[in-house]
Amino acid sequence: MGFTIDEFIEKFSPPFPAHIKIDVDGIEKKIVLGAKKTMSDPRLKSILIELNTKWEHYQEILGMFSNAGMVLHAKKHAPMFDRTELRAVFNHIFIRPESQATCSTLKS
Figure 1 (cartoon, rainbow, N blue to C red):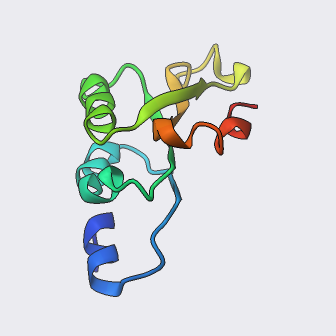
Figure 2: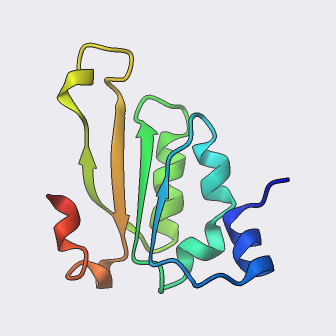
């Protein structure tokens, strides 16, 4: 059994998340598509997601965050991956601009 993020929140009414970490391999676009409502909610302050910058859907995924009112706050990569097949994989931190003051520690 599986749920999108939006379906899970609607069905089970958990406390609304202020921060979300998405760590999946290869289905990032599906996860983001299933979180459109949650991502657009102003109660959500940040999302951390690992994305491969070489994926064909990379720009589309960035656009989904932008359309939800989230901006790219930081993009980090472990230098030990520079000479591996993971060299194009980065952790992306997206924040809601009005949350920037409360998320300033995310950059370090």
